[in-house]
Length: 523
Image (cartoon, rainbow, N blue to C red; front, side, top):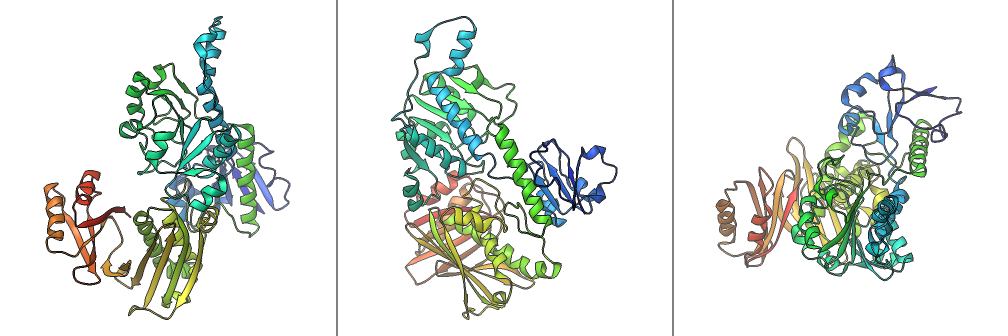
């Protein structure tokens, strides 16, 4: 008999996959109302219950925690992982709901529906004050083309709109298949009549629409954010609204929620909703059914497809695999930050002692590190292969006898639309993970922290010039490794720092004639 605690309000209809099973007992109570938490095998929550390390320490028998929704901010993932507890969510349950809400906001924005509604309810009849704009033949710019962005594109095409997409990792083949125009950000800003954002909130996407990028948009542009507060710089919007450069804005999310002292709400051309993207009966039912079915699958010994963290492994297997999985995750993150273009194919080659292990998990470690900068959901060793396939990327493993003098070697080759990138790593007992080759340049460095990858001409004074620029900005170099193939050709250097470099420093380095490229990497 399995015992499941449903700590937040979930309807019986949503719990249907679990109810009625002879081997499952479902108890619906708040955590504070339960006398003995040690008897439960699974925990289902929405957003109200905080699944902390302290709570998990009391639920000593719990094997799986399920969040009936997408976000898992209320769950301590690290604490769950350390305790061998699988955490799952429902990443697809609210896709349609959010896409439809975005489109409803778009139509309401260009036709002034909220303002007109208030006017009529105030017993006014000012038709001429609410002359709107048609969506037909307008150019829609979508920033971020994951599940929700793709659904919005389908609806926009049905309305006769042109669709332009900025997503650094959208392949040409996928764009053609979905009938959208893949462009760079500046191109999208220049052509779009309406811009909607659908990316996760990361260091790269925070404030992606800011004072500089907003200045590049068309005069009279409409903007929407039904994704995450902070993707659009809210303070930067104000002068563009005042000047009329931005004609209207629709916001379902804010940097601070609720937006008690938000000046944007004082503008008539701004419409807002209280984070309703996922608030439909269907979405709430879908996410509940999804996680209930996933819990049932797990308790029946079947695999789950929406795990947020690592699967439970035996201690022996985990101890053998973990160092290599950690290495490949770092390799994936590093490579993804170095190769900023759409990717078509990934090949991981194993040689030496690592080839005798269960390499599937190690490969997934690479995929999770690689994808974490490219997708709009949580990704790890469990769901990495599924997400890779969804993005139209093929991947595979090879085995080789070429150890290149090391006891174990992991080599990854990633092929994109325009170029390829190779990276080789090894794990040395009592020494740790090392990167030993980048793009056929021999090198040796520890993949961690704040790094700077520079390709440059092998000439006297280049390294000194880099050092001078960093010194001018009072930046101390922690470590430096260099590599070259032949004298006077191209060379590389990898530098590490105690903190991430300012973008101004990177731009100044990039401006030096003998430097080919500069990549800032955070691991």
